[in-house]
Image 1 (cartoon, rainbow, N blue to C red):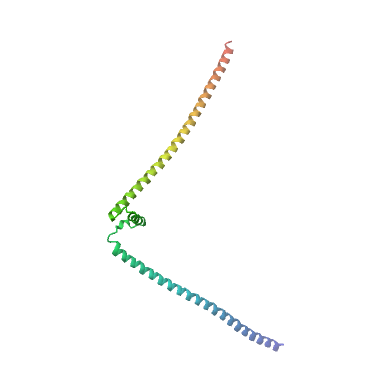
Image 2 (image 1 turned 45 degrees about the vertical axis):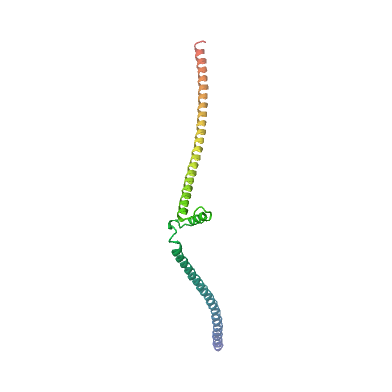
Length: 179
């Protein structure tokens, strides 16, 4: 029986070693496939990053070229205090509609327009405040009317009570005095 146990032990060890090699080989193959997929994905990401970096560099060069063009062609005559999109759009519309022919006319027209807008906005704010004031006055008048109505009701109730007290007093004193 001891020999049989030794044979079983040796056979089990051999089967275990074979299974270990098969499982290890399968696991290594699976890891290799995953690593290959990851490497391929990393290569695609790197290629995309390189393309993006080239695009960024190209955009930077284009921006630099526009900045140089601005500095040489526009900056010498364009008023820098009016470099907002709103001002530029206004200036273009003023020239296109023949409302201004010089930079000074564009700036003066723009300032006049902005002043008018500020004044109109201020007037609108005043009107809104007046509307609110009017509403409050109407509310106050309504409340005063309610208070006056209540006061009149109190006066009427007081007069009625006073008449009733006078009547009771005359009736009680009249009976005492034999009237």
